Length: 252
Image 1 (cartoon, rainbow, N blue to C red):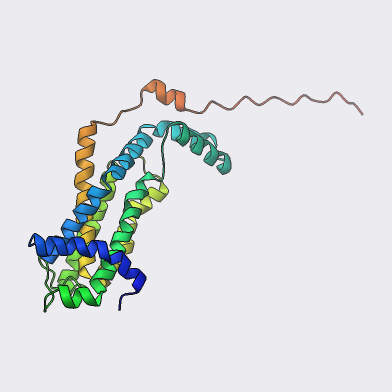
Image 2: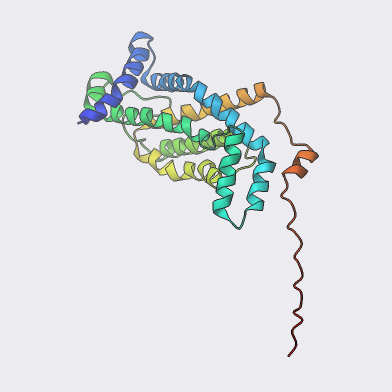
């Protein structure tokens, strides 16, 4: 049974999916894909803001590297200078996480909806309707071939979306590199154990992200490369020369 609180999460996504299925005549798999597009359109303004923020960070990489080099021995001072630099240039380093965080409630909603008794009994056909090569959307993928194909599709589309978001891997820091290259493999086992409809949603949102990034970057034009003067200005000043200690004139 779905928990009462969880049922509140499922109402809106279920209403959207049922609308696409009952009113527009889409299959349940295509209805989940359509839900993905509705969600991505709803958060499009935030996604565009995130893209601009990441673009600004990558254009300012020489200055960021200079701050990190200058204060490499004082992590607290380095963090303070980085935050001051972000504030002065109106950059939000956490902006790249917002689209993902905003999708988590929808992902949880879809999870509870696919497991819910009312959706399985009243909405889905018997036997449950599949999608493409997937036998059932409300059950984990059946068979080794289907499972492997879903896992590969998830990893490939997640990597493609992540690399597109980071402008093909330019200027990736440690945490960003882990999110892009590590999380797809970390979450891959869940593809085999969760309802296949969740994989349809996440693969669809990955494809949307990849296409969105390619289109937006093309419209924004090539990234501005720093001039030699800007690179030199961003370099930390050389350390002051050490003063030679004067020998004391004391005699025994």
